[in-house]
Amino acid sequence: MDVSLSAVTKVYRGGTRVLDGLDLEIGEGMLGLLGANGAGKTTLMRLLTTVLKPTSGRIAVGGHDLSTRSGVHAVKRMLGYLPQELSLYPELTGAEFLDYVALLKGIGDRAERRRQTDDLLEQVGMRQHAKQRIGDYSGGMKRRIGIAQALLGDPELLVVDEPTAGLAPQERMRFRALLAGLSGVRIVILSTHILDDVAQSCPNVAVLGDGKVAYHGSTAGLTSAASGRTYLVPPGRPVPPDSTVVNAVAGPEGTEYRVISENPVPGARQVEPSLEDGYAALVRNSSDKMAVN
Image (spheres, rainbow, N blue to C red):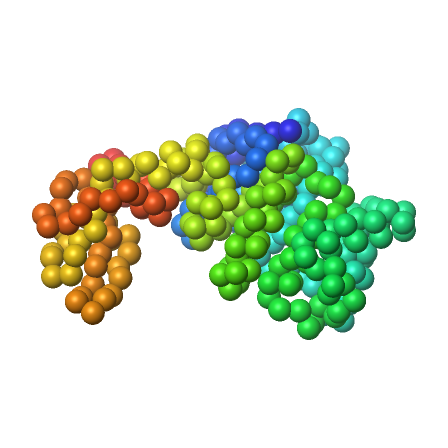
């Protein structure tokens, strides 16, 4: 099972070019999808889930060409999708909602729907809430029902968009562990702005920028982009004007800055980089190249 995008371009009405000749090969496992707002992450996911068609280029999922009607039908049968905003029916119980979605996915046999619904409710830790109305669920409970509906039919490709946004830390950890446990036998694509979710659960990452793939490889490889360039600037020390500030922490003695710099920073301590540092270094390098060009 693999996903292949070759020279994919998407231009919206009015001439806005979101993807520009994008090439990407995705294999089994969990892939984190990163990029700034407007980088094309949502467009890419909508293309993969057959919601949109590319302006040009080729997309194949499991060998099925999405430019053909038969290819689209085949991919829909192997697809699970959790959008950032999933339309739920607050008057239905969790079990009733999953049964309804299973019908929409073509699972006609009632006993099979019941089996899958029960199994998934158990898997996402929602069995005890199966007969509770969705309108009474917490945000985390709704996300868990969302991933359960995406897993109906045992999809080979699972696409999830910002699944932990707005969740409490404990729910985020639970959700990350759930997604990581699903990735062994399928492709899971996790699109998020929360780099810690990627650092904790995704062995590979793709970063979009300017309509193309700015980086595709191991998460550790992206982190290492900031090796030897990450510094902690203590309170009272100046932040070099040519550095990139990754974050700042206020303390009783002042503000400590974490920065990316090409040159040694006087009075600062060099530290091991995080994924956030590597991402900042990648963005910095890309901006420098654009400035030169």
